[in-house]
Length: 181
Image: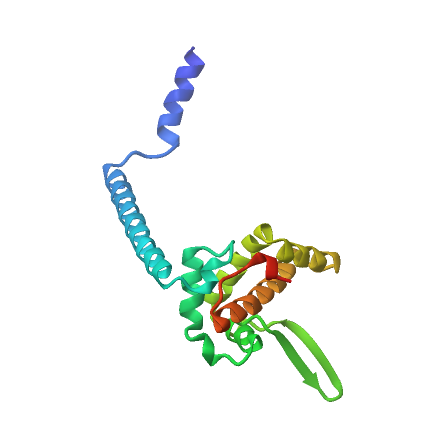
């Protein structure tokens, strides 16, 4: 028992320091965090309400949530200004790099020149859509079978998703998984 009391006394003096100032600072920071979370939740609720009123075809894709659809629609803006899905890929920074020197030509990695917010939303949606759509899942597993790494295969799914979004938004039709190939 004496050993236990001795260890307890040593622990009081060595582990942590109680200071009223630190306690007040911690409580203040926790209050600020709660206020920020509340504000974020209210803004997300407003965004969800607005995007549901707009009801863009992108929102009809299972695996694309309201917030992600809002990011995609707002970042791309007017879809009619893109002549092809390749222009949208370029805008999002998902097109492959192209390097040429003399007689040699190489296709490289993603250039990442576009909107990082858009690219991030598309990658997140690509991860979800491969779980909800058989065509995207098959395409993902095909890329994995070709020896691509997980993130590279997901970027290919994101590129396919952009092509789908282009078709839906320019034609003004909702997503039908039976017509997806």
